[in-house]
Amino acid sequence: MAGDSDRLRERLARINARAPVYTVIHGDIDLSQLFNTSGFMLEEKVVEQRAALSLYRR
Image 1 (cartoon, rainbow, N blue to C red):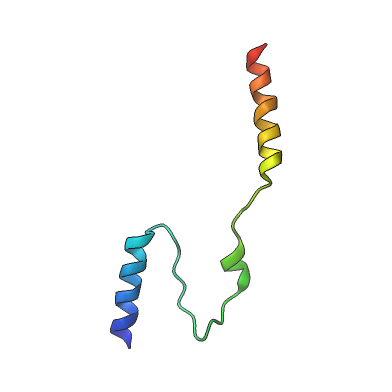
Image 2: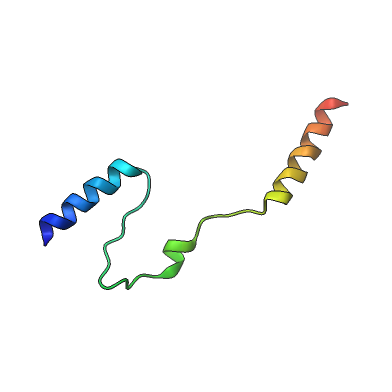
């Protein structure tokens, strides 16, 4: 089984080398590790960008 795990890790690293890989047993993991995407509200970012751009256009 350990060899399978190593091969899987290598394959995942080829797919996305920057993504973290967590070793878990039967899916037992703190969900905040999986869903902490540091997300943002797109609309807020667009408004912020427009405000910043308007300063340069004056």
